[in-house]
Image (cartoon, rainbow, N blue to C red; front, side, top):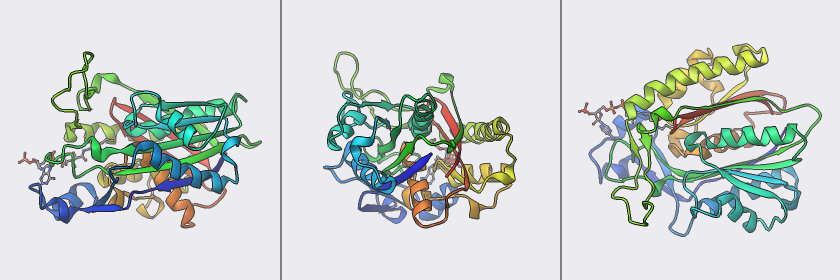
Amino acid sequence: MLLGTGGYLPETILTNAQLTETIDTTDEWIVERTGIRERRIAAPHETASSMAEIAAREALEAAGLAPNAVDLIIVGTATPDRIFPSTACLLQQRLDIRHCAAFDVQAACSGFIFALSIADQYIRSGNAKHVLVVGSELNSRLVDWSDRSTCILFGDGAGAAVLGAAREPGIFSTHINSDGQYKDLLYVSNPTNSRGEINESPYIKMQGNEVFKIAVNTLEHIVDETLDANGFVQSDIDWLVPHQANIRIIAATARKLKMPMEQVVVTLERQGNTSAASIPLALNEAIRDGRIRRGQILLMEAFGAGFAWGSALIRY
Ligand code: COA
C-alpha cells in the first residue's frame, strides 16, 4: 500500500510572460494549446538526486519510516546526475541507506509508473517490504530555450512515494507497455557519441502534433484495459491522477472516463510537464491538501517517449 508521499519544486518560477521576452509566443497561445501558465526551473547547484532527496525525506516522514527501513530504491528519471552510477545510488548515499538495491528506470514521462510497477512486483513476491519510488527531472537542462514548440512545455521537480507490504494490496494492478517504432517522434540524443565527441544538439526534439494524437488514443485504450483487468467501471474511480503533459490530453482521458475535471488532479498550470515527476507531484499535492482521502480509488496514467506508457489502479 501507499504509505506516504513527498514532493519538491525548485524556487524559481518562469512564467509564460517571461518566455514572450525571448521567443515568439504569447501567454494566450500557451494557455489555450497546453493549459500551462508557469513552470519551475532548478537552480544551477540542484540535480535530480538533490531534488529527489528532499521529496524522498518528505515521503519517508509521511510514512513514519526511517530511511534505513527502505529495502529497495527505484528512481524514474531521464535527467540523471551522472550516466552512472544511477541517480538511485546517489539518492541512497544522500539518505545514508546501506544494504539495499537502488537503480534507475528510464521510461521518460512514464518513469514513475514503470518504477511503481516494478515496486509492486517486488512487494507482491515478498522480496521487498518498503520500496522508495521517486520521479525526479531537470527538464530545463534538456530544453532548447530557443525552440518555442518545446521550451514552453517543460519544468523541473521531484515527487516520491513509499510503498509498504500490507495484508490488503493498495495497488490493484499496473499496466506498462512500450513501442520503440516511435523512437524518432520524441527524443534526446546522447550528448556524446561513442568516441566522446559532443553531439550537435543534445536537446529535446519532438513532433508535438503526432505525439499528441497517439497519446490521446493510447491513453484511452490503457484506461479501458486497467478497468477491465480489475472488473471496475468508470464510476468506481474517485480520482484521475494523470501525467501532466497537456491539459487537452488530460481532458480527453477524463472525457473517456466520463469524469468531471473536479475529479482530476491537475498541476500543469503551475508546473508544466515535469516528466517522471509529474504523477508523484500531483499525488502528493492532492493528498496533502486533503482532496485524496484514505480508501479512495485512484487511476494514474502516463505516456511518453519511446513511446512508453502505463497505468496503475490503486486504493489509497
Ligand atoms: N507559440 C506560438 N505558436 C506556436 C508555438 C508557441 N509556443 N509553438 C508552436 N507554434 C505554432 C507552430 O509553429 C504552428 O504554426 P504554423 O501552423 O504556422 O506552422 C502552429 O503553432 C501549430 O503547431 P502545432 O505543433 O500543430 O500545435 P499544436 O496545437 O499541436 O500544439 C503542442 C503544440 C506541442 C502544444 C502539442 O502538440 C502537444 O502538447 N503535443 C504533445 C506534447 C507532449 O505531450 N509531449 C510530451 C509527451 S510526455
